[in-house]
Length: 378
Image (cartoon, one colour):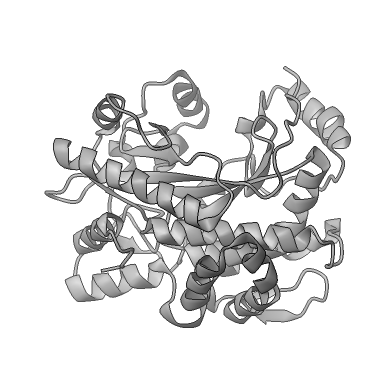
């Protein structure tokens, strides 16, 4: 079927989606409780949207359309409190984190939904291995061409969001040595990675998408697992590289960092994106996944080597006026604290493992983080 029209939305509006873990509070393994949780949550109004994900041990929550940090954070806190209360009623804990530290993928059950069954039939064991947890951020775009411009202008900054959100150092009971092991699972899918370099929606719709649809490989934009993808039905770009943070406060800060960065890019003060920017894309992506804030990336145009931590701090300084205009100074201050002093949640989880001596203790810490009413990490 043809690609649906791009429904323009108010520029720089925000929406946040969080994929969350459902955990057995007795042994801290994943719990196949999505159906029970969704049934309970469906009995009263939910402060946003909640739906199943590909396996029974996870759910996805989403905010309404938001314009500023205060409103976004308020709704995310309402969502968190509602989930925690519901989980307590059915003895299920909820937490963030990009991977569960010790779950076994082959024990997961595909949620009974036609699309998930189709994915499972197509991708085999990869579908169950896709029991990983990410934060997606939607940014409103006033036109389809604006969406494509921002999609490619953001390519240089993708490592920032990977490193800042990284919360998946453990997988299958082992420290992977990656700050974000989750993205390795995503990269296994054939339609993942970067979008094609096109700056006109007409070229994308009538050229690239039409050709891909004609191959029979794709039916809709949902079939692309790109790091950033346009969402024509929402009128947004969807950033998909973030691990789910341990706290909703960090989730809100990441979204508003993206919002301020997009406002800056729309001034067109930076050189326009070009195809050759992607020569260093996978290398920079790897550096952010493997080393987090300690990664060293290559600037796509100058080819200078950049400390990821220092590049984030320099970017925060340059987009400060945009944060002020958007009312997100508090969000950017949290990002500054993460980059300059505190570190990401991958580091926090490793410290918890050192203190507790087990991967079960890591999950316990993640559960306590999510429950916190003050956004503390312990």
